[in-house]
Amino acid sequence: MGSQSFPAVPGPAQPQRVSKSQFKAHALELFRQIEASGEPLVITDHGRPTLEVRPFRPADPDATDPLSQLRGSVLHYDDPFAPVAEGEWEALA
Image (cartoon, rainbow, N blue to C red; front, top):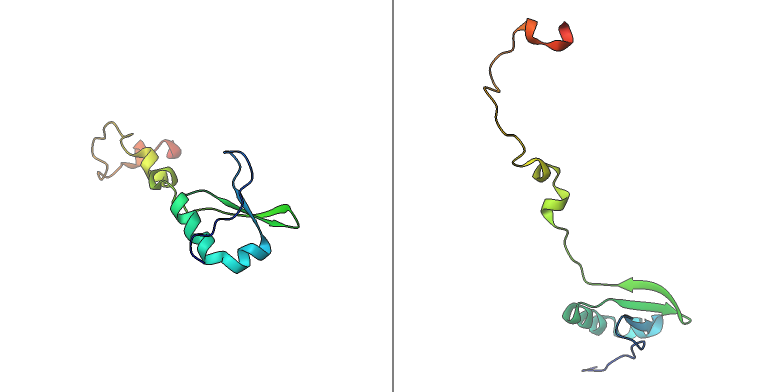
Protein backbone atom coordinates (compact mmCIF):
# COMPACT_ATOMS: atom_id res chain seq x y z
CA MET A 1 0.00 0.00 0.00
CA GLY A 2 2.66 2.54 1.06
CA SER A 3 2.40 6.10 -0.15
CA GLN A 4 0.04 5.61 -3.07
CA SER A 5 -1.68 8.83 -4.03
CA PHE A 6 -5.17 9.06 -5.47
CA PRO A 7 -6.01 11.50 -8.27
CA ALA A 8 -7.34 14.83 -7.06
CA VAL A 9 -9.76 17.01 -8.94
CA PRO A 10 -7.92 19.99 -10.46
CA GLY A 11 -8.02 23.26 -8.52
CA PRO A 12 -6.92 24.03 -4.96
CA ALA A 13 -10.46 24.60 -3.67
CA GLN A 14 -11.74 21.17 -4.76
CA PRO A 15 -11.48 18.30 -2.27
CA GLN A 16 -9.89 15.03 -3.30
CA ARG A 17 -12.32 12.55 -4.91
CA VAL A 18 -12.29 8.76 -5.01
CA SER A 19 -14.79 6.22 -6.27
CA LYS A 20 -16.64 3.94 -3.87
CA SER A 21 -14.59 0.98 -5.07
CA GLN A 22 -11.30 2.83 -4.46
CA PHE A 23 -12.54 3.92 -1.05
CA LYS A 24 -13.53 0.39 -0.11
CA ALA A 25 -10.14 -1.00 -1.11
CA HIS A 26 -8.07 1.74 0.56
CA ALA A 27 -10.27 3.10 3.37
CA LEU A 28 -7.71 2.94 6.19
CA GLU A 29 -5.04 4.67 4.11
CA LEU A 30 -7.51 7.33 3.03
CA PHE A 31 -8.56 7.88 6.66
CA ARG A 32 -4.91 8.43 7.58
CA GLN A 33 -4.52 10.94 4.73
CA ILE A 34 -7.61 12.85 5.89
CA GLU A 35 -6.34 12.93 9.47
CA ALA A 36 -2.88 14.11 8.39
CA SER A 37 -3.98 16.74 5.88
CA GLY A 38 -7.19 17.90 7.54
CA GLU A 39 -8.79 18.06 4.09
CA PRO A 40 -12.14 16.42 3.26
CA LEU A 41 -12.55 13.55 0.83
CA VAL A 42 -15.48 13.21 -1.57
CA ILE A 43 -16.60 9.69 -2.43
CA THR A 44 -18.24 9.27 -5.81
CA ASP A 45 -20.66 6.74 -7.29
CA HIS A 46 -20.37 6.51 -11.08
CA GLY A 47 -18.61 9.89 -11.09
CA ARG A 48 -21.33 11.60 -9.05
CA PRO A 49 -20.39 12.89 -5.55
CA THR A 50 -22.38 10.99 -2.91
CA LEU A 51 -20.48 11.22 0.41
CA GLU A 52 -17.96 13.47 2.12
CA VAL A 53 -15.52 12.26 4.78
CA ARG A 54 -13.87 15.00 6.81
CA PRO A 55 -11.90 15.25 10.04
CA PHE A 56 -13.86 15.61 13.27
CA ARG A 57 -13.63 19.07 14.79
CA PRO A 58 -15.22 19.38 18.23
CA ALA A 59 -17.52 22.33 18.73
CA ASP A 60 -16.40 25.25 20.85
CA PRO A 61 -17.77 24.38 24.34
CA ASP A 62 -18.52 28.04 25.07
CA ALA A 63 -20.66 28.27 21.92
CA THR A 64 -22.86 25.34 22.96
CA ASP A 65 -23.12 26.13 26.69
CA PRO A 66 -26.04 28.52 27.25
CA LEU A 67 -24.73 29.49 30.69
CA SER A 68 -21.49 30.80 29.18
CA GLN A 69 -23.48 33.50 27.41
CA LEU A 70 -24.87 34.65 30.78
CA ARG A 71 -21.53 34.53 32.58
CA GLY A 72 -20.67 38.02 33.85
CA SER A 73 -24.09 39.47 33.06
CA VAL A 74 -25.26 39.91 36.69
CA LEU A 75 -24.02 43.30 37.81
CA HIS A 76 -25.16 43.18 41.41
CA TYR A 77 -27.65 41.55 43.79
CA ASP A 78 -28.59 42.43 47.33
CA ASP A 79 -29.41 39.18 49.09
CA PRO A 80 -30.75 36.48 46.79
CA PHE A 81 -31.56 34.07 49.63
CA ALA A 82 -33.51 36.51 51.81
CA PRO A 83 -37.19 35.62 52.23
CA VAL A 84 -39.68 37.68 50.24
CA ALA A 85 -42.69 39.07 52.09
CA GLU A 86 -46.11 38.23 50.71
CA GLY A 87 -46.83 41.90 49.91
CA GLU A 88 -43.65 42.24 47.81
CA TRP A 89 -44.80 39.83 45.10
CA GLU A 90 -46.15 41.74 42.11
CA ALA A 91 -48.13 38.68 41.04
CA LEU A 92 -50.19 38.78 44.28
CA ALA A 93 -51.06 42.48 44.00
